[in-house]
Image 1 (tube, one colour):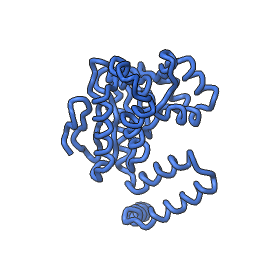
Image 2 (image 1 turned 135 degrees about the vertical axis):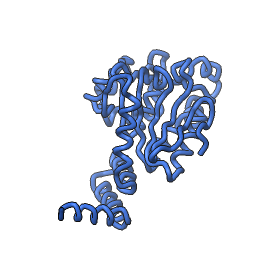
Image 3 (image 1 turned 90 degrees about the vertical axis):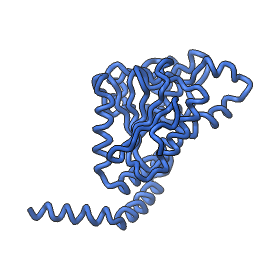
Image 4 (image 1 turned 180 degrees about the vertical axis):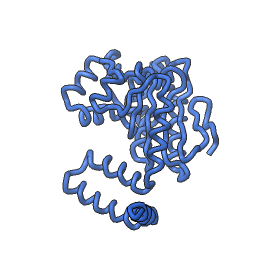
Length: 259
């Protein structure tokens, strides 16, 4: 994989199975214009298909994670239905984050606003700087949250909290995000990248097959019934138990107990 898919989105070299995918438009707080959104789709598809990569960190260059869609560009595209632009520009990357067989950690500095919130919500773990925040600013310009934000938020927060966040465009601080279950860690602003990498290192130390199966089971559990989920868990458990990794880890565990 090239170290740089483009000037607008960069992909780091693989280090211990970890890569960083970075939105690189810091001059506009990493707002997504068409070219950047397409580059992010391509970057995430590439890392999803690379078996050498075990964990992905999604971040923004500079002081913000992503300020949302670049309105300066999208105001010129009003003739195209919003649903078509979503399907072409944003949904491929958002789906990649959720379905790729490796965990994704969002490392959030500064603002994650508009569609930027959807990329955070689609990630598997979230680390936020102390001054970072999530803001669904759609209603301020007469729109509704999109990119799956409504689906994620009503499941994570319930209707009342999700409605307040969407209807009042209330910025949600890092500390509040942790309390609400929207983020895993709130750290000092200058420690976001380091904290995300520390989490990534802990994840890649786990069984790759079990990690992938865990992500798949939890994603499916949000949509399936209890009985269907229990059946899926059994199927995934059989697959994990059949792996060489399982046998090696059980043998190592037994050996450690003998000492």
